[in-house]
Amino acid sequence: MRDFAGYGASLGVEQLGDFAVQIRLKMMTLPGEQFVIRRKAYAMIKKAFDENGIKFAFPTVQVAGEGDPATAAAAQHALELNRPVAAA
Image 1 (cartoon, rainbow, N blue to C red):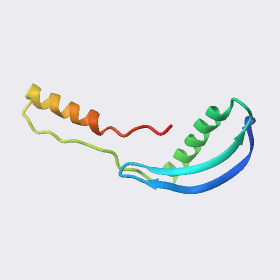
Image 2: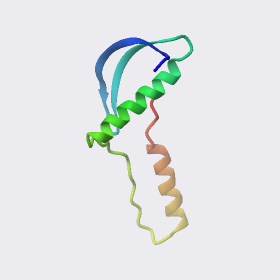
Image 3: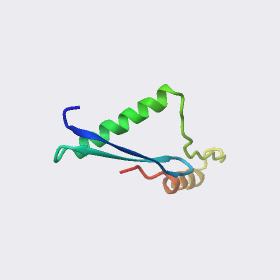
């Protein structure tokens, strides 16, 4: 990675949530390249998790309603309320 200016420090697990593990890292980048490096780092971490069989839970909703439109609308609303927020 040519945009990577130096190795930083792994500050470890920041928080364990219901649907995520937040890891805190520090890295040095060239000016203006921090967003590119962050995306590359996220991809590398995801790949390492996948290669080691590490999977995370995600919310699901099961609705029984025999195709009732009101039930489907309520289920869609519940999914939208419970959707995890993407990490920045």
